[in-house]
Image 1 (spheres, rainbow, N blue to C red):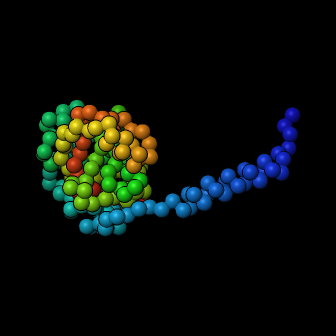
Image 2: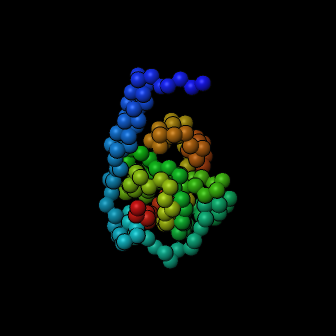
Image 3: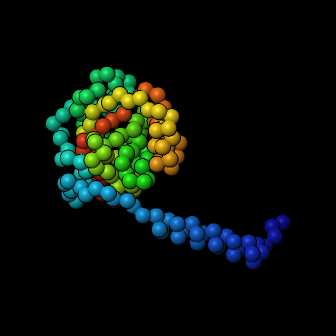
Length: 167
């Protein structure tokens, strides 16, 4: 037999729900860069998107990285997570493949609420050696542990342009 909730437990639940809703309401999207182009459906950050370069998939980049090192490509990929401090990098995820995407020379950022959106980008693959300290720093900026940010030699995308859908 269930006992009716005590007045104090009802108040506690209400307080927790209120704190949670206030936290969500106060969560603010950080936008440190203005788009270089925009239309009704999207905003492009960095430089204007070049659709004339060859298409690639995240699977191709992960499986044959040598074919894409310092060679520009066009990639359409979902965002798993975005840096919550500045929007200065994100984790691209497509099926079993995940890869960090940084922005050329730290010259632009994307909105921090871009997680879950499928973006189109111009980039090139770069080989990096990531220290344990740098991997920990990136994980902290994402506010989660992420296997695409492990230390050691890896590949990541250096993006020149990122088109983010609105909404």
